[in-house]
Amino acid sequence: MTETGFRYAGWILLDVRLVSSSALFSAALAVLVLALWFRGRRWDEYVVGFIAVFSLSLLSVVLLTNGLAHYPAIRIESIFPVP
Image (cartoon, rainbow, N blue to C red):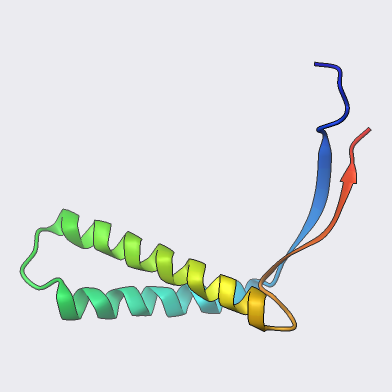
């Protein structure tokens, strides 16, 4: 338990504007998908569908911005050992 080999910390940068606009886009996409394909279902299927579509679209948008943009939404700035 006294090994220091696995204790690291890091700076993670988060662009709040890009993440919030990505979240807004993902929420709008999830509502659109629910409005088009989930007609006449129970409320719990709406909740599960919204969470699934929202999380998949948010993950894909963040991965696309990190992979294609020069200023990504989430970036690990540095990793350093903790004494």
